Image 1 (cartoon, rainbow over the protein chains, first blue to last red):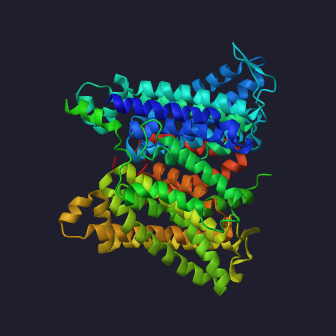
Image 2: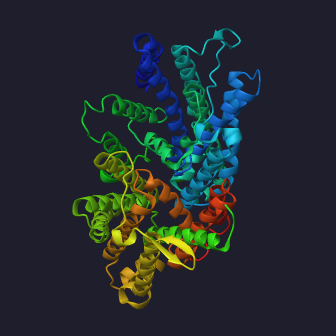
Image 3: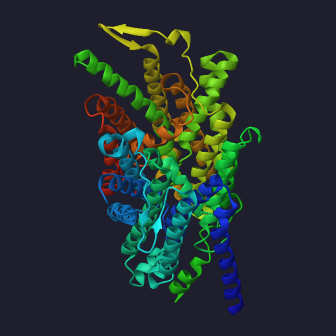
Length: 327
Length: 290
């Protein structure tokens, strides 16, 4: 036991060192790519809360990513002197609020009905983002919002126009939220969520408020997606309503699936894999010929659970939930 | 645009044409859902595939009518393969995986279409006989749109006949209300599932070919259609053909007149309607099962 903890510690320290050293070794383009991977991975983690931990298959998760991104972009643009961190926080809170309201209706439905209801709200928000030109910029999105001047972080000033600084800032936010999520899922609340996933009826029978637990994880997941969206808005430079579209949520679904890594870190390899393939797709399209990389990785990630009879939902996380139910 | 009686009639016809096209796609979707309890997300991908295969057949043979017959058959066969080798295998893993696998098929088909046909729109010309306009009481209407109306109406009548007047239709309707009971009565339900799934995808393929010259063939057409058909299936009620028909016309007219009167709110209203139906009456207007 102690040995495995030691090994994990060494591995974690090694990964941390690699991530710290990355901008010194990698080129600007690669660093930017790594930044992108970081916030998409956070989005994937938020999807994993919902689907992996609570077993709720949502088709409307992009809504919260978009909500966070739009609120951050709009508040930073229109509220003079608003601190960067406050802008990100606002994005996350707006997404959480949206998640709480939408989730209130959604958690009362199951299966396809749940998925379709989340999709309906997703499309509803997307239509608003697309049509409400005065606020969202419609098709054009919102222009650059990355602060030009160094940001006062209390102890030091952070110049976010430099790519490596963007990288460190994004990484720091992502790691902090990962740690919080890691802790939250190990509290009794996390156990309840898994109990609800494994057997809803029995969890309700044991006296747990199933709908309230689902609503809580739904809101938490929306909050995380909102934070990821805020980071996206900050560093992508502009917001576009396309992110809201139903099709884009497959990123979340894709990222959430690979099971063979640690519970919370699990979505990260998926995110890297996807981003790298997207990069490959553009850069080496001619060199690689016309091989359908997109189809290849979609089939790999989405069809494999069915074809190989793997069950990505049956991760280690389930074990203690099942234990709770068996008593 | 000034509002005259004839412009209102034309707008209503536009809505009717799009609504009937929606019905062609949604009918297969709602039947599959009624029987197998699976929301087939890949359905709209088959619609797109039908359009692309149809456009290729049109280019190779030069005959639109051949495309209209062959493309749905090809798409239906592919649908049968998907049911037999993917959906049926995943069934034991539970509901979320059935949804996921059809989601996967949707993206794989989408990517393969981009790979084969390229990531840009293709135009399809309607056959010569349908490329003109019809004139009637001072109004002019494109003949091709009228053709869509006719072919959708024929399909509707055909489906109605099969479902209400034949033994096969009786078995399918029985399976929609209780599949395991029908299985116990000695009807081969898995084969029935295969047939309905394949037939539904073939209808989607037919709709794709028909839609090609009307909406043009582009890689995002599946996604656009998918969302609209979901609204139709939800509002009409899962598993109800009549509901799908009524809801298709409703959505078609809503979009047609919405663009005219409330261009900014038409889309919003459509999704709000879907959400309200799911919240207050998840069975939809005509559905029976929850």
